Length: 171
Image (cartoon, rainbow, N blue to C red):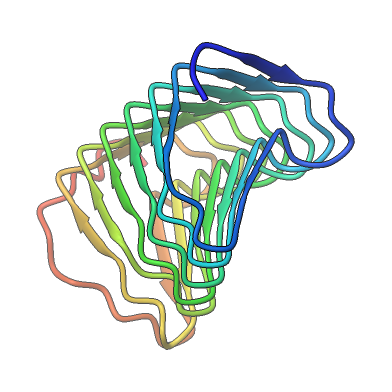
C-alpha cells in the first residue's frame, strides 16, 4: 500500500490483522473516526514514511502479539495517544516523530514491549512516554523526549525498563 490518501472512514484507516505482512509506505492517513492504523493478531507489517494525523481514537495501535516495524513516520495531532502498544506486542520503532497528540505520545501497557530507538517524542498533551504494567518491558535507546505537558517518561505499576541513554531534555 503506497502513496495513498486514506481518510474519513468510520473505523480505522488501515487495519492489519491475522499475521498480516507487507509494506505500508508513504501514505497520508488522516481524519478516520477510529485509529489511523490498527495492527493486531500477530501482524508483522512495515509502516514506513507515513503521515498519520487527526484520527479519532489514536494514531497507531499495536496489539495481540504483533511485531511490526515502524520507521520514519510522522504520528501527529491524533485524539488520544500517538502510538499505543499492548498485549504482548513487540514492535521495532525507530526514527519516528510523535507529536501534538491529545494523549500520551507513546503509550505502552498490558505487556507491551518493543525496541524504541532514535525517535523524537514531543509536545504531546500528556506524557511523552507512559509505560505501565508488570509485563511491559520496552527497550528505549537514544530517543529525544521533550516539551510534553506532563512527564517526559512515566513508568508505573511494576514496569521493567532496560537502562538506556535516552535524551530526556526539557520534559
